[in-house]
Each structure stands twice: as C-alpha cells, then as structure tokens.
Image (cartoon, rainbow, N blue to C red; front, top):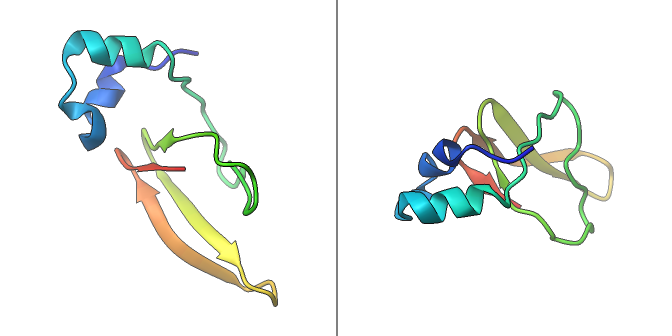
Length: 82
C-alpha cells in the first residue's frame, strides 16, 4: 500500500523536499503494518530497505556468540533505519 506523503514530511531527512517531490517519493514507498515481535530483518541479510517508524518503537539488536541479546537502539516515531 502506498505511503501518505504526510508521513514523509515528519521525517527530518525528507522535510526539506517540496510537496510535489514528497508526493512522488511517497508513491514508491510501501506502508507496511508489522505486528509486535515480528523481525524485519536479521544480521547478514542484504541491506535492501530503509525503514521509517510511523508509530511505536522498533528495537534494533544483535546476538553475541553466546546468544545474549545486545540492544543497539530503539527507533521511535519519525526515525529511520535499515
């Protein structure tokens, strides 16, 4: 489902774009709702996507060689990662 250009306006990286450019960009951005606990990607996956948090938080973490979880950051509304 295409993204609303208003979502992109709230993101610092895209805030300097004009309305027309932001609307064009929104046409190629997919809006995806993700259930809590659903992995978006794993360490070693090819880096093919940029994610924007519309609402909520996304925990970014890795696991060390013993399997312990190491939280790198929590991305919240308006932040990007990928």
